[in-house]
Image (tube, rainbow, N blue to C red; front, top):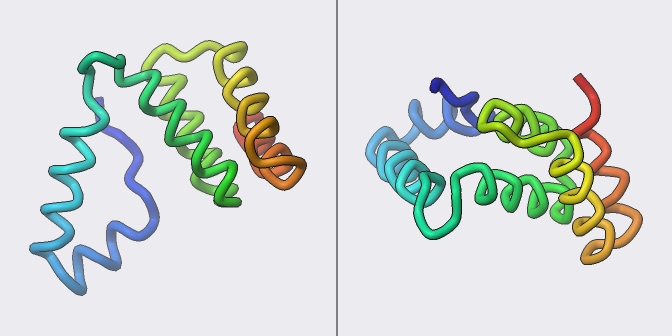
Length: 100
């Protein structure tokens, strides 16, 4: 499955190709199935982007999670956890998961 790349990847690839490759390799290593399935890890990254106020990241990652089999209820519950841990700002940002 071809994953949508974060927006910073093109700039980093041009400015520092070696670092870009290392980041991509680490990202691939971390976000694959292990003790936690890739879907769960992806939902965790969406949670973090909601708390860190990255609306475009939330939108892209929620779509990546859907591609990995996440249900709308799993995405909604992840947004609920973001709200619990990050408050109203995280909820507002997290709602970007529901926009197409």
